[in-house]
Length: 81
Image 1 (spheres, rainbow, N blue to C red):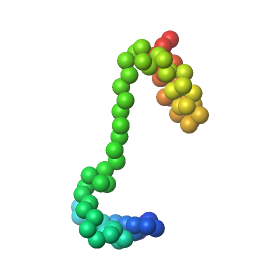
Image 2 (tube, rainbow, N blue to C red; image 1 turned 180 degrees about the vertical axis):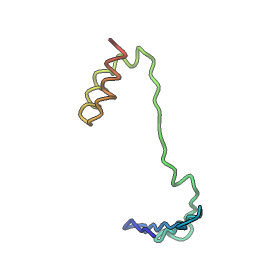
Image 3 (cartoon, helix red, strand yellow; image 1 turned 30 degrees about the vertical axis):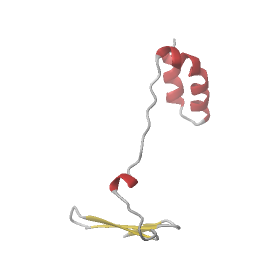
Image 4 (cartoon, one colour; image 1 turned 135 degrees about the vertical axis):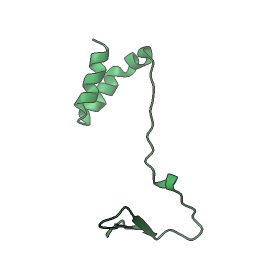
């Protein structure tokens, strides 16, 4: 069993030799409805035309480099070689 959190205490457990798992969330106020969707990581994609990307390419590459995402920065440079 593993527990984590300070405001909401989340405890997870599973069978050692099976496929069953469980989750307990303590500290959720009464009346708050939760669903699986509340726990799914949301990912957002932004699509650029080539022209739009060319206008922000240097800024994107700069921030990617500063965040240590050199492959992302390189992918911008490669697109405009």
